[in-house]
View (spheres, one colour):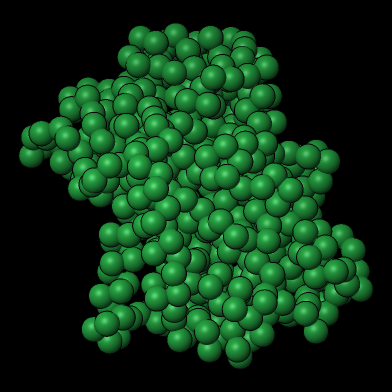
Length: 496
């Protein structure tokens, strides 16, 4: 029996893997091809016991997938020192230097924020990941020689040995290791033992912004899985990965859009999903505006922007007279219901509180993914900040308005919503001209009117975003991943 060990990485990757059709594929090959599939803990290893036990039931009782503990927190003083040096200095220094050498727009924005004297009232809009002190690049931040030296130390056995991981490799004896995050420090430890015990290793680029933000990738995997040709080019250009090792497999999170030709009724009945028009009390005649909200420190001023839209809908300012405004929460935002409670006073507003990452439930996230799919196909336009939701919307050819101002809130320019667009991956998306970037109430109103009157406006740009970023092919991402697994393991008893 062949064995696969999957270390998915954080909960966003776990959500995309295990709330998508990939889950059914993994279950199928575990039975049909006699392949034992083992999934490691999610979100950083280890997770709390309650979450572990809940997920163990989900994987083992329902999906024929073994769920295991693979690491523990460092216990001895030496282990804690090494862990701290590796994660809080070496890895950050490598990321700083890598981004500095490649002159990424994202990195320049981080440096600008770090060097800015912020007022106390502005710090609530500051992210922990925004601060990158210059000492991380001292001395000679653009020195490729120093980078190679630090990278060699970071990859060395001394900084990656882990008895728990090694014992699990000995015990589980996997034939294939799949890493959901090829830039995470712990992934380097897993690969250390994959190489030691001659286990083939494939790694997935976790999300679309990581190759131009999160530092160097593991440089000696057997295979690299990317969403699209853009990621392929970035792996080759910036990370010096051999093109023959790179496979474009899409992203399972977009697979429900790939199956968009499937009748909605069949989708609802197969997955036992409540009809969205019933759940959100939507009439067939209503024009839906879908506002994908963000966390407070990212969606600065969203409340005042939504209030402006609501007042205009109530006054009949926009072309469509029957409009429903759906506000959807970000999976990491536990303030959503409190922040947007006030908008329930408008009869046309619906609150869509999506599943929370902090209470990770693959089934709930699956429901959420499918509901979003169904709603977007009925939606006249989407409003969001800098978000992957622009890709989701493009997949259903739904017009997209990108918010690039803070409504009635004043904030330091370096922390502004507008400045958040100064990142490599989103600048690339904007270049395809499939979204409207609005920086004032006036431009927001004009864009809403234009899209309601002509929903086909910017269709060509949205089509390019779908092709370039969602990575659609003649097969779904879940099927392509499964085919790669079978190919690496030299086939099996069944085929996708």
